[in-house]
Length: 308
Image (cartoon, rainbow, N blue to C red; front, side, top):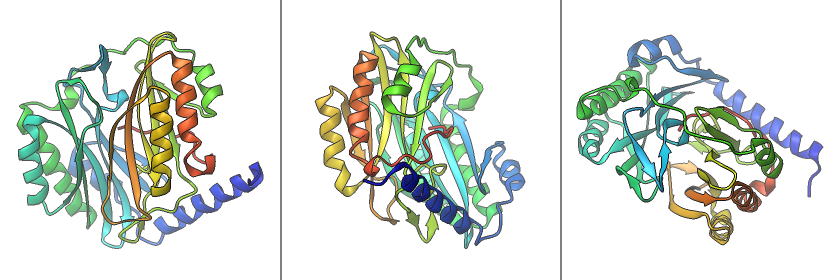
């Protein structure tokens, strides 16, 4: 088992190699992306991400409100590539949005790489559609705008314009940190962890896929010590899937979806969505057990702000 110094060096080397990879290609024109999509994004290590919180959707699961910070946000990430920019995104859709928006994705020449659920017993039902593509920055930005505009057209309004109230959260987050070994971030009552995979050099069409571009495990919490809710996503290599699923189910955390997000990635990656309701400490111990089945428990980018 490598020591802390070895783990740090692994994370450092992989992180540097990813940064160097992005710098092979010209820097993104982030001003053009913001102007053409109409959305100001976040810049991180040469990459850029725009988000659209689905503030208009009033979704509940087991009496808990699912607000954007709990996993109800559309996002599209841009990373430098040989074509100019490679994009990956996750578009939140209602059942009524699905047909028109997927037709728009194909019309724009982008690829649909997954359509799936994140929750069960959610009312109303929502779907998540992953998209990908590459091209000159200005061209790909206009394609993304057309897709996001189709969502607005389908609903008759901009999903981001509504207001969202914080959800109650009295969980002892310091205790969660101590159990899980990571530091989360609080946003409108949702306490969220985003955990990278610095042990895996993930490539898609010859371009590195980073934590910022969606290659991460996350866990979002709300509620109280006695009745907490946790929702999230595990990213797993193929030989990690069975152990993670068994650990979650053994600890009364529901596995609600297992699927891909990409189609040409190397190595092969699986994503798992889960939902748990119960005592916060017990849920955290269950997640810790499941995390122990991934990445040889390597801790690299243990804290990074993300939106899903």
